[in-house]
Amino acid sequence: MTHPINSLGFAKPEKDTRVVVAMSGGVDSSVVAAKLAREGYDVVGVTLQLYDHGAALAKKGACCAGADIHDARRVAEEMGFPHYVLDYENVFKETVIDEFADAYLAGSTPVPCIRCNERVKFQDLLGTAKDLGADCMATGHYIQRFMGENGAELHRAADADRDQSYFLFSTTRDQLDYLRFPLGHLASKAETRALAKEFGLSVADKPDSQDICFVPNGSYASVIEKLRPGAAEPGDIVHIDGTVLGQHSGVIRYTIGQRRGLGIGGGDILYVIKLDADTKQVIVGPREALTVSEININEINWLGDSNFTDAPKTGWEVLVKVRSTRPPFPAVILPNPDGSAKVKLGIAEEGISPGQACVFYAKTGSQILGGGWITR
Image (tube, helix red, strand yellow):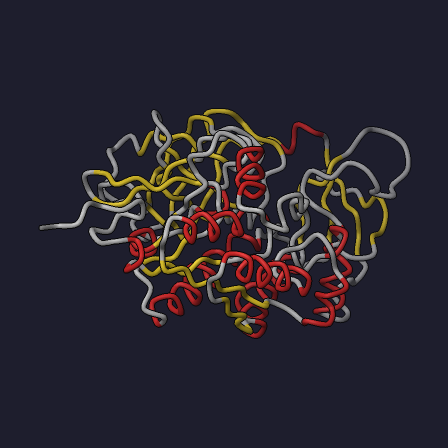
């Protein structure tokens, strides 16, 4: 007699189903671990120490810092399951922080949280979960996983305000087979906090992390200068018509679309249109010069049912997001033979920068079809 399918999708008792929970020390992943432990699963909590423990202890409001490791361990003790802390500091620096610094120096606007999920949590940590004999790995991300005709599918969270699909577009089919997201169906963060209180967790009222974990107070430039001494070299602020309007103290201090703090006096309102790291120029112009209706992307992760390059002649008609905070809008993806693509945006967007992500969604429903990285 076969055992009924449990809530994690396995035909065996909960007590015989091992699940590694990626615990950041925050309320979301703590609720996932507690919920699964309460349901009778064989839970193993794992927290990654991602950067210097001494510095981490002094920094509040970021994930994977010293105080958060303590919080994760405390939740494991409260709920009675084992908890391990793994030192991933070198991996994190090599695969996330160094690329972040180099991308900024090249005039791009990187999204390190995506790289962390892609390269550290869903690659190295997932491998560790398999080494621990786990049937699956669960996280506190707000996203949904459904079984479709062709296997596991990625879908937006039920709560649009908490949806984290923009940061998880590079999740591969193989990873998706192994991952579980027990919070994706919840209607609001209030439900998560209510569960935390129900389980008696010490982190029930803990505030959400806001900053990128290794960027204190949102000061990207200060982090880059520390990682790459001499990076803030001065150069010219140049109008798109070629006129030199002033000098700057480092390309890394500017972002595409910036209007304030340009230091070039009165006159017309100007915006940063482009950052040229090679010539050390900050190029500025009127707002209309920021508008983009086509972008090029590479490193594409495609989760559609057909091969990406087998698109119809008119291209793949999808919805896209080029910013995490904006709703998806119509676009057409035209694949190139080398696997890169051009994306024609149905709504012209302002301030798009190389290094950002373009995430694909199905025209109807909530399925995520993958995405790629904007090159220009």
